[in-house]
Amino acid sequence: MFALPFFRRDLPALKGNLVTLRVPYTNDYREWSTLRGESRAFLEPWEPRWTPDELDRTAWRLRISRYREDYAQGTAIAFFIFEKSSGKLAGGITLGNIRHGVSQSGHVGYWIGERFGGRGLMTDAVKVVARFAFDTLRLHRIEAACIPDNIRSIRVLEKAGFRREGLLRSYLRINGIWQDHYLYARIADDPLDAGTKD
Image 1 (cartoon, one colour):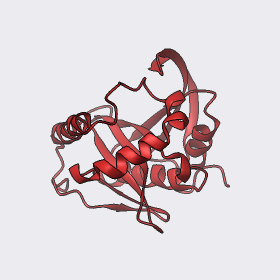
Image 2 (image 1 turned 60 degrees about the vertical axis):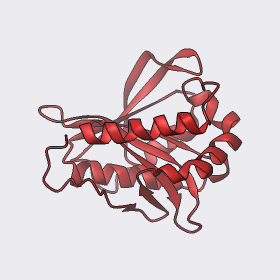
Image 3 (image 1 turned 30 degrees about the vertical axis):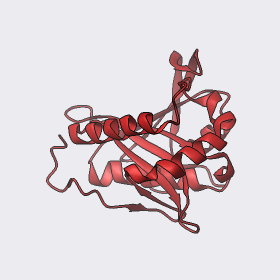
């Protein structure tokens, strides 16, 4: 469990300049499956291999259960990203591998629907999650990893104030292949406006 008195079960929505983040609800299924389905070719090179039932309602229910369990155990919080201007689901972002004690750290992972790419939504979402991690959860460090060929993701992280710290060899199995990843990190003491300008 999150050992923080202000961490309530009814987590409020988090707001950025371009996006609103909130935990996924069961009735988000149709919008989520449509966005993921139409973005499949765009997302597959950067994600674990999709299962045959990836977009089925039964798999969705299991996903929601896992999100709730991780949240209850204090190990991860999954958010859906909604574009503020349209209210439409644009993607997802998770603060996972949350550790307290001497580590006080977490790991950020994210995805965005193809039609929402290139609008600055993910950069805004990463900044919002970073503020939440540092200010609310009192974490000291958050990390993110991305495949060296994923130029868009590298730009998101650098614009959000993350610094590249090294190369993790054969780090994650992505689309069926063990891939090297760059490790990026941001710490609580980094300036709020850190990051590459547009």
